[in-house]
Length: 202
Length: 312
Image 1 (cartoon, one colour):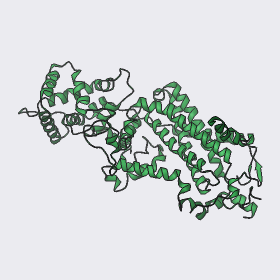
Image 2 (cartoon, chains in turn purple, red; image 1 turned 120 degrees about the vertical axis):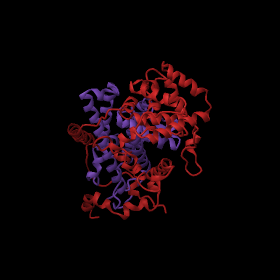
Image 3 (cartoon, chains in turn purple, yellow; image 1 turned 45 degrees about the vertical axis):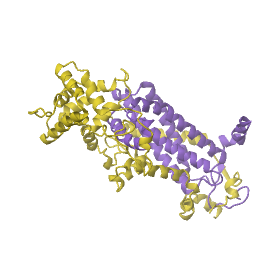
Image 4 (cartoon, chains in turn red, yellow; image 1 turned 60 degrees about the horizontal axis):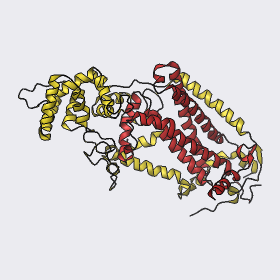
């Protein structure tokens, strides 16, 4: 049964200590490792501030000082989210972190990056201010030129709003969770020059 | 050449370990990020330049408004000649033999002269405008084009004006229609007329934004805010904020030739970025690139503590 195979491919591959480990390989000792968890922390801030903005409506930040401040938190959390994610990505590249059947981890990370760009883009479209008018007007040409404009109209603020608060976060959330599960399952890739001894280094 | 996977990379790590608390790490990261985000928000805030309206346009640059209205009637604006997904006036952008823009079809139908000018004017109760519309609708397409093109040329020649005298009647009803739409826009009625056709509670601003973008007012304001296409505008934001800095590579292609002046620049940039994105995703499988981490040993710096401790 595919249900059995699914269970075996997911839950049964994990040991409880894989999810929240109390130890790590000795080589996990560099500032570069911090950027993965910083990315997740920034994403948490993005979601929390985004939910606050969503509950108050798309025009709130135009008319309320508190709304403007929450909008600023959402903006800066997004900016830091991307900074951390890009540093994390470069770090993983220089580690050749796809080694040892970790290709899917790399790919899900890459998809998360691209999906995040799309999500942020829809966020810029729903600001209901001059910036969003101009971005919508300019970006439509790019999307239209390859046919995407027939499905996603940047000038339709209602469509962008729903994409930004529902569809896009769902997509990013799923891919990020998948990425984190793969990281926990495969573990952190060993150093390139670690001794190749079956079963791990000395 | 395929590199053989090493056992040490494949199997669970059996070497030295160190204590680790993932929950603690996440909490510390949350606090650090919160401090950074609250600090930047308190110091820099966020931009919020008020949206512009058709009324702003008609009041601030009435000459541009009238010229654009006339060009819509003449069928010469960007919207009128766009192609898919708005109309079939052109093939749109192509990628070699791929006509993706055309193939995906007209999904947001726009007929610029009808939607932006004639339909709003039809809501006016002024006899002069109604008479002008009757004259416009009873004329052939060739006559309409002759009137509108003639008036567009006369306006262009006259400079910053909102009307030109029609001494020999060669512009037909076009001057009345253009002036009539200017009046409607200046009192703020046109914004509602272009957004409430589908629903009285609008969320779709396709028509007013397309009309606005056909003039120069929107672009002039954007260029003032360093948002123009040749000013890295794709990634910039109003004011001095970082904007979508992650779009730097996408913006970059628009700054260089031959893409900068290409008629199909958007499609070509999308194709380049599509290929580069695939390259990023499949980088571990791309020869030479997947060997860079070994050739340029930044990893020695990353794992320097481990290598020192292990004498490697």
